[in-house]
Length: 208
Length: 317
Image (tube, rainbow over all chains, first blue to last red; front, side, top):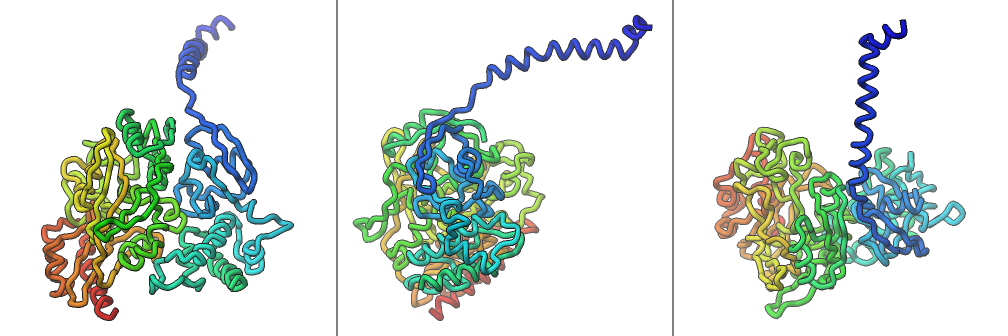
């Protein structure tokens, strides 16, 4: 019986498959060995007040550096293409989309993430206002919303103009329409927009 | 993204030489367009020359009474500058009508000029696209072309240039200053900066390999009322279907450039000349010889109405 099995179709196929697999393995190994490792570079930046030194694949975005390498997972990857704002962080005092920035572009920069704005024991006033006004549901866009919201109030204070400003020579005011326009780069699938605007209005009013 | 090596340039001429000498090298400024395209492997540079340290981030008066805007001035900084708001309001209005606050904080003046089309077939590597892969065909012609060009297109490409800032710069007669790898400089009128697709749709603009934009200059202020009207599917954070950049004088004369209709900001000086005759006269001249598709033919009457509304605003200002 056994010798008949060896000569059966199954036996021939199993035997030839095994032979092929053994023959392929060295070729794959050779190819993997030939592929060059992608370039890496050292980069130092200050994140939430602490200097961090990293050695990264040059392709690493600031977003991936924060989340994957520094384990600061508060900042979220929503679209990875600068269209949703969930990755918003504050770099050298200005909000940017961290998904459209390479970590190596930020040598020596100061980066503030949601973790640096406040903690559960010491909420940033904007975080506290988001809680009071129910400014989130699933919470995924929320860190980006809060970083943006803080930066928007600062942009208004610094006189940065917007699309809805009627008189370019006037100083912008933190009105509802101004804040909605300036927050247009942060989208929220749960639709918490109106409560986000109210949270921002409360903080803006408190500052006034 | 494909792997790449990265360096920081320290002088403009050195940056230009670094890009010119290495095939597959590109400049990196803000990165808000280039990195997006690199993630999709539409752009695959093997070497990036970061120009952020080149000290090209000032806005200074020129001896002709105009302004010189450094290539690295961010969109936000340019729009917010007091002199721009006061004397070149159309430029501020155009910039703040575009993108989002986060993007405007990072995007640079030069990078904004160089941004690539948003044609959905250019963006889909599975689709034929003569701009992305010369000779592969154009899926937009005969495809969904609602957002694409009505004029200046060719049988190989109907892509549009999507930016707002450049439309205002076209109406202001801006000039783009550059430095080449050999150190020589030149000044390119904005009208000659962007190309029409013709039979070389893979070329967006007339820069040479390794040629670095160092500044954009504006002539002395025009006076008049300044307008940027952007018609789009959403109230914010969307590209233009049609946009109108206009500077209108008290006597009703003026100049206008249209965005969203071609592979460059669309201005026809002969159309400017008939501004006092009203919007329809202007667009009849500006869009003579237009070649719209069935999907985007609406853009021409839309441009007329947008210009009419702009002229009315100018009268009541």
